[in-house]
Length: 316
Image 1 (cartoon, helix red, strand yellow):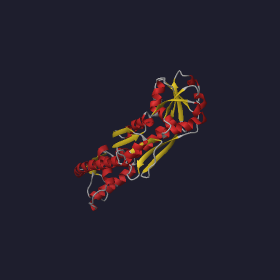
Image 2: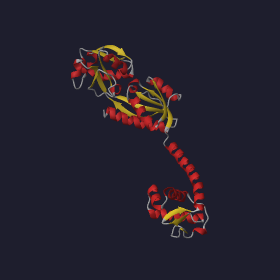
Image 3: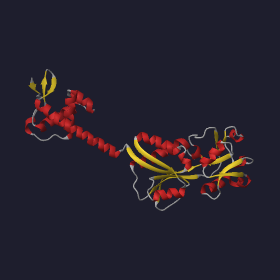
Image 4: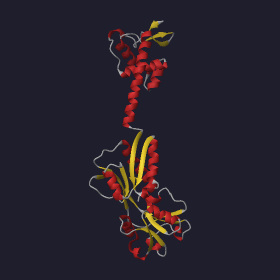
């Protein structure tokens, strides 16, 4: 048995200063794998690089860390004792790294959302489903609110984000992202209009139309979408949301023109969905209180919602 005498151990008796973290990491890797080659594989570096750092570590320690026995590199008694201390220290270093990673990219959090009814049928639930894979400990709450109430909830910090169709403006709110949403025409699958590839306003003549009240921003947008045909259409059944309009159409009560967000993901069984020819578009925005910082979870929600929107809606 002899002390390891190559460049790894030369000059080890002259320093006696603490090792740095890299030297500890290399020494620990050699101890775990039983050699320089194994340590190089474990740390994904070359063997000469391991030998160089190990020689520096031994020099810093001021005593031999290893000895060569029948061609094998074995720790000295001093090296074994030092390894016990470094191993305990290294577990603490790894905990610090884990905490730092979790703070930089948290896997938990809370998210309170106010959502327009159309966006609550598929787009927001799909976003939350994907977000939970990134944040397994996520706790979320979603309220379906009309635009004026959504503004109040954002201003008094009852919710973190608002996902709004036809959002209301307010100087203390900021739009994080915006999209434009086209219209679609929905009817039972066996309805005559279901044979058309695209439905135009003139095609709606003679059919009972499910619509929204003309005094709401949504209803006014629908009137603009109908264009000159609005006065010729049987706008007989008025509902408060596009989701309700889809339910009525599904039940056979008539034909409805709704925002495409309401039928994203084909959420309604037995309902035919066709593009509605119109240049009219609805605004969709993610809103936040401009005086509150955005958390990592909120930022991730905005990112994921954008991807879900692109996949489900394409380009309008």
